[in-house]
Length: 431
Image (cartoon, rainbow, N blue to C red; front, side):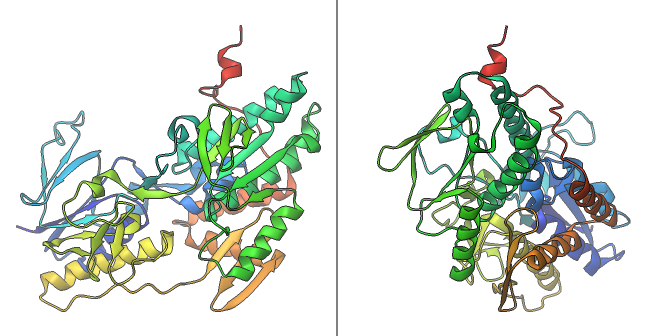
């Protein structure tokens, strides 16, 4: 019987592992590769902020797994994993409607756990209930429509105080995602909304980033981080460091010192925790719930189990950032080590090597640090675009995103709200 290699999660790490395993074994019949995810697509998360700013179409950064698979041999099952029994070597999923997959346990010989991560609210009162998450494609679409909905209400209200609240947009967290999101918002609000909505003036719009630490873009070279902060300030974006959020309310946040800021849209990008599935695994975990694995990405007591991606903390690189390139390398190492283990060969070790950083600060401007070379401005922005197009999976998606960018440079953004916004106090209370 062929050995079954089970991969949980279809993000950067899971997809890379499936591709590497298929490449290693080909049509040998030695193994069966089974990829399980609760979504039937791979999401290119670095472009989520551009969904929230209506710069690209949401479908263009989501690649169906069966299309991505092509002629590769691995199987895919859409199912939600409930638990993992390491002793029995079984994975339990929620039952589906088909007889073929009835929710019975899935056995495995080797397991790669790569479910990604989830938002960490740090126990701050009201944060989970009163802020918008920004992890999934649906989250980005909801944020986009909530922003446009707030602008619609602000356009015709006669209450100046309410207008200011509706047009105050807050991001909690000054990391890569938070900074790119607020920069994209700036392009949408000042480049489109202030020009097309006759009841809104540019002076009415307020963008704020609250960062608990002393610096934004931690992990970025300090000179580039400070340059980014000055650039955002010149655009009128308030970046407030050493300003941890203490409480969140519906329509406002309280920061350290007791100051309360009224804002209709509050997006939480302040931190991540390991996926709950990983937190439930036995063994050692770090302060954010990641499984502490050895340098070969194995759980020590279960050498047949590998953890990869945002929920893995390799002892050889505990401080590696939780970004796509790290997850891709995790997936590659985990797959190759399964091959080595089956063939009684020495295993490879994971070592974090930074491949540089790129941060978009809105249309026509970015900061880049690659190979020790640091630069910013328009050419850095072009480089940012080229790199992200190259890393998109599939030529079709590359063309679609490139066309979106080209159209965005020529025509105005699409501000249509295609579904009724959820949890809007003004829409819900309308007669």
